[in-house]
Image (cartoon, rainbow, N blue to C red):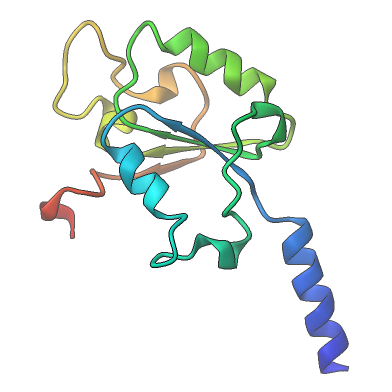
Length: 129
């Protein structure tokens, strides 16, 4: 009984694991790519297969500064993702523009696509450890 239920749970998890689309634009992208290495082991959640095509991805992870010129491309890629789809804004730059408050950068990716999860601050910032 326990083995059968556990087997069904593992099968459900494998069938419903999210496949991330990497949209790394700056230094936070290095931290995002690091999650697929053996030391972090994101594979246990079934998310180790970063997709290069938006048509094969469930979740878009936006990390880094988003420029005004990149905004329409970001929206096009988001529109190409199949439903259901989620967006994670990773880091201060993607969430609020960070320390870069100028005309060339978006002050938050939520101005272009709906964001489901915000991860605050920068992963490499020692003040947030």
